Length: 306
Image (cartoon, rainbow, N blue to C red; front, side, top):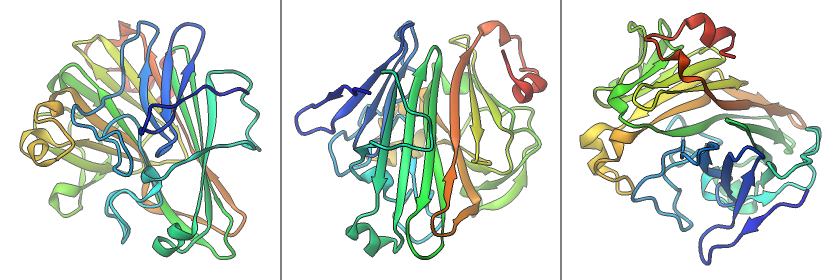
């Protein structure tokens, strides 16, 4: 498959994926990071900070960064691990996944370097397939242990969603679940609300979550469904006004039009023996605005919206 790589001077090379109905995605080799996903009407669905630093070696705030081999500060490594700060390569051999035979898909790989071994003493291969289809964005991360000893890791696909007004957004599918509240020393609580809404800072790790979670943006009459496999946890984050002002690469007002919903494995790290491989999958899909009649039917969230 011929991949169209665009070089932007001293910025990271990027790959633009297009599918026949007009949906597009852009992926940077730096960080293996999706930085844009647009629907057929050319509407941007992912948030990018107005103060994002787009030149290495800083991570880019927005899009879908990959946190590996550590999420947040759940461990001794740098915040969110180092995969988002490395230059990835095109993956010439993505087997055992079937080959990507069209222009709307790309396979990337990050292999451990000697420098990485000083930080995290395990040899690994982290692969990512990114595919765009009509109203869908698919990410398939895989981790292979190529070391002679076992290791464990946490991982997160940090989805920065662009929304019209975060105070008008509902996240459904997480009700009644336990969560760790990162604002309260990771104390464990049980969600009491019938949906997650936003009226202040939030930073929670929801545990043992369903495979489907719905994001309802009332003002844009749009629902995005996150469907995930192999990543049982989900992180919900918005810094709100005071924290936003303290984040150097986030605009003071940016918190109003974004929030993060991550597909993640955090509470129980993934263990890999030598030669073993872990595979996850995330699909973001836009569904009909006919679901904007108040609360989404939880059975439709869990069993499929189409």
